[in-house]
Length: 323
Image (tube, rainbow, N blue to C red; front, side, top):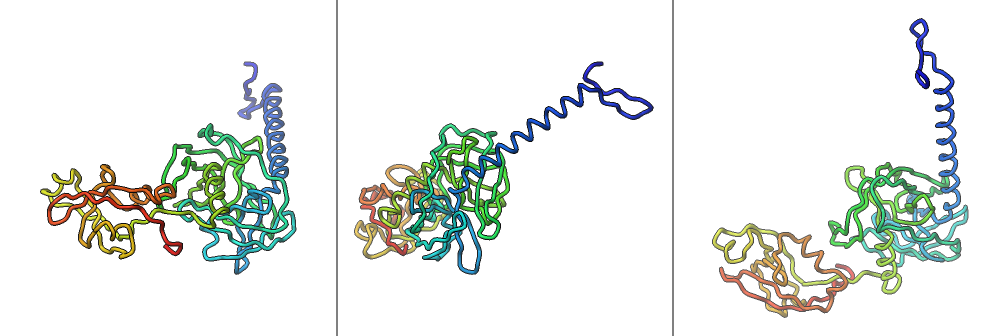
């Protein structure tokens, strides 16, 4: 039959139609490969290498002229680093970090390359192909290629940071490329690549980067709400479950005497069971309620004290810089 292989003496013999299809596929793949390499080279200047103490390098994104965004987790306690772009080195200072979203902002004198256009993060779908760029001071440009594995809605990190979308990439990521830019196939910036748990690769979406980096640039830190008490989850006895309408609460084990909790009369041994009428199940849930917008607001906490349910109204403070 036309387009199918024939067999002569037990050996497959492909006809001309099959050979032509193979050559055509190879040509298309070769063209696509060349276009990807050209795209990476065109956008390479937005990926910078950041040299840390001990000679280790990670990557960063040229966010604005003179400013670089990278993964906060990679910096640790570094306060000054060296940034390399296009074989030029620039001294850089850490402006601020937000571990809850894994975003750090660096100021680097002399970085003047053009930044990339913003891509469509809201329309990102599983299956779309992306490039994750990085830069090594030893080897130069690093390119990782793969697809979007998961593109979910807003989510909260384990440290309480609010990210605009949950994005997981179906690719591997070298350590040197962590903190580098993720691009769509039009060469537009959509995210920052970071290493997630169990070898996964996550992408911090551009809207989150813009929001957090702007606050770090203005204030050097991200304000977080502060109640001034240490809490730990505890199961509630059955009789208290009926009162609190939940089977778990948060036991107050410490109270800062200068905090909103102390001023509101919260005591050691109180058990917090709700925030503004919504049940609380763990401390991570509470962290999500104490974002920058919560500072200065008031909240009503339902607590169990001496077997009775009480309402306590307090003002949310600002977490100390060292907290």
